[in-house]
Each structure stands twice: as structure tokens, then as C-alpha cells.
Image (tube, rainbow, N blue to C red; front, side, top):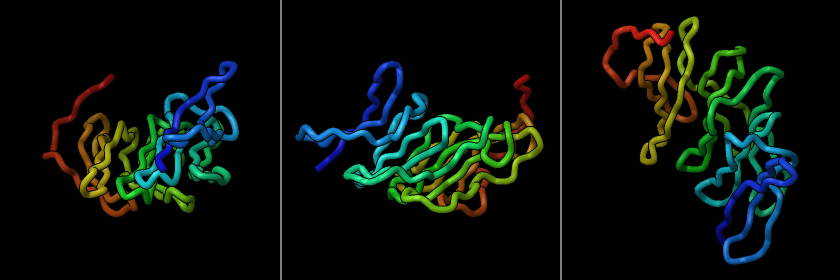
Length: 178
């Protein structure tokens, strides 16, 4: 059967929860309060949920089992926006300043846990990944970044498991966001 993941606010704290569709079984997924900017998401096969909290990014089996850390946030680091699960359910893609404080980059990790990999191209000094989206048909990740020239945001494409990034748009003139 299917599951519904939801956030329960209890005494001012948000907890990741799951409920079986067509039944009354409800279980807590998170071990503590979660990040409200990244609500729990369910894998396409309805086997796992992914959520974020102050400690990092987690994956948990929907039908029982302990949360598995996908990414641990170092002090002062953060996730930028919500993580997404690839259409095949194999990987979780997210933006974080995981390697360099204040430099948001694009990462991918197996949904059941394992090593994560930076999938955005090397960024120019001052460059960062702004946002991303997943192709439902190809499983490729499209992202906006000022990767080559600071303040020139371009559209890039990369495989969710990693590999070379390909510029999608034609070369653009520099823009100033200051």
C-alpha cells in the first residue's frame, strides 16, 4: 500500500511522520525536529522518505527501520532549498555549502546512504549554484550557476550520479546582481 509523508507540529516542533493510505497506522520518521523548509518527500517506489533537520539530510524506510544519514552538516553549514529524489528513486540531489562555507554547490547521494558526490562543475571564485530541477524522462539534473564567470548565471546539465556538466544555454553577457 501507499504512504503519505507529512509534517506534524507538536509543541512548536516539526516532526516527519508517515501514514499508510487506507489504514490508521502512523509512525514517526524523524528522530527529532525537522527543517520546515525541506518537507519530507517519498521515493517513487514508496519505500523511503527523505527529510532534513539541523544535523543534515536523512533517508528512512517508510515501513520500519532507522533513519540513515545522507549528509551531515558541519557547524555553520546549511542546505539551500529542498532536496529532490531522482525519478528512478536511486539518488537524492541537493544544494549545500558542504565543502566550502558559503559556497552552495550541487551534490548527489544514493538514497539508501553511501558516499555523496559533488555533481556541479568547478565554480569560479564567488560562484554558486542557485537552484536545480530533475528531468522526469532522462534523470538528468539541470541547474543554474555562475560557474564560469562570477555573476553570469547559466543553465547546466549533468547526470544525477555525476560526470561532466554541459552548458545548455548559449554564452551570456555578464550580469550584475549587486
